[in-house]
Amino acid sequence: MKVYLRAAGNISPQQSLDPELFFSRRTYYSGNRMQAVEPDYTKYVDSKMIRRMSRIVKMGVAAAMECLRNAGVPMPEAIVTGTAYGCLEDTGVFLRRMIDNREELLTPTAFIQSTHNTVGAQIALLLKCHGYNNTIVHRAFSFENALLDASLLLGEGMDNILTGGIDEITDDSHAILSRFGLFSKENNNPDFQNKKFKGSIPGEGASFFLLGREAGGAMAELNSFSTLYKPSGFAEVERRIQQFLEEASVSMEDIDLVINGRNGDAAHDETDGLLAAGILQGKPCFPFKTLSGEYPTASGFALWLGATLLSAQRVPDWFPPLRVPLKNILIHNHFQQTHHSLFLISAC
Image 1 (cartoon, one colour):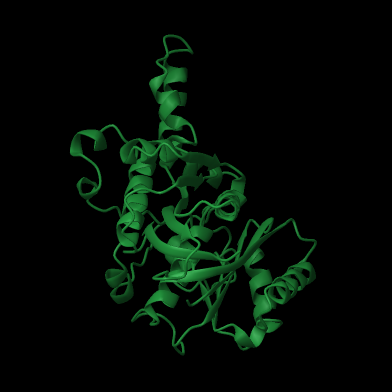
Image 2 (cartoon, one colour):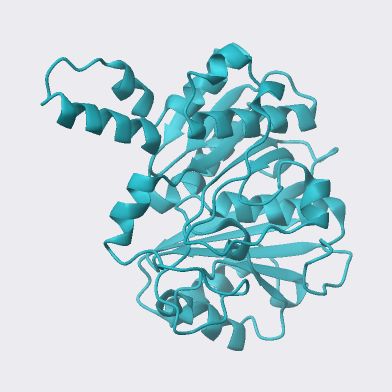
């Protein structure tokens, strides 16, 4: 069955919660991480409750509420959330208390707030939504599997499924992951052109979509999506892209834009370079992680970017030249060269 992105809400290192600001202004980063541009949360949640929420919960709630507001839908039938790391800030608090108190006299509050399903649960509590609520935790496929779960619910007859992907970066997680060589010590140029670059620039964000079965008023149609785990090499990735398009009955000539997952790490970006010189030759490509940074559910930002371009039928002032109108956008994301995902979205 067909799946439509009715509306979206996005918090990222860009001014993405307000599409008009996003189209007119790009935020550049020169440090070793990209942090989300946070809104005035009092527009979405009572100020007394905000004080008890961690950053990731506030970001998730605001993005979800903005999505529902844009759709004009006060209550979804179901909520599905994908996250790889969960509430890292609260996890850090809990672990510190364990160490400081020598694992004695621990209160359960920090542990309860550190669980992965906290964001989805908080959204349901605020909306008083008693429907289906599920959180998918599957590393860099967390958002993709949340979309799969939501699509299955639509196939069973439900409608208006609130679906999102969210992850955050904290001082503790940045320090720990940097020890494994995952992150660069300094930022690269905005277009990730320096091939001596080792490690990616971490980011964070919350992307929520309202999935429905009707095309009326939708931002875009989600034609198809697929995942590929640990491909043997570039040739397998290229074959999967060809197979993916064939199964969707779309040819490469029909693709107007490719949004790829280049993250600045020379070792990981080699596949993107080979694809650009091969099957994607001649196609305009945009590396979305120059805007969002790298994190496990960053494909949610890529989907938001593609859907926003298709819905507006224009490109940002700072975007590379691109011919409009846009009809089909192919998204290829990869995380650590082990988790590859593909999305095909089309204008309604």
